[in-house]
Length: 122
View (cartoon, helix red, strand yellow):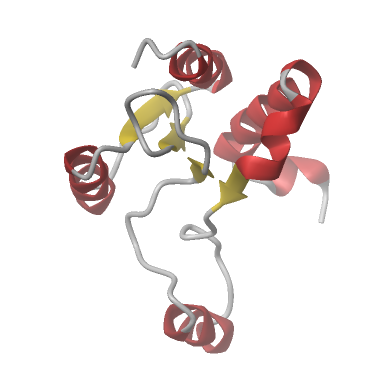
């Protein structure tokens, strides 16, 4: 598969992970990529669903609490992307459970969110 065959959103997410790896390498052990949007065959999709995959979950989870939140969920979008109804519902639910959950439009925005989260500004 040629490298440009990946969705643009994936490049934004990879840039975020690269930044975390360089700036906060200790945090990489706490990042979980939630493969809710992974395209696959019906057979594999059915098995992933049986294993707990659900529509609407955020792309990234930082299993690292700050002073006021249990962890950080980020739904990655391109600058022109739009979250689904299920994603917005999941984000609202997680925020109600004292996590910080949000949509990020691009890598730069996600990096700013992470910086603020680590500085206990969120």
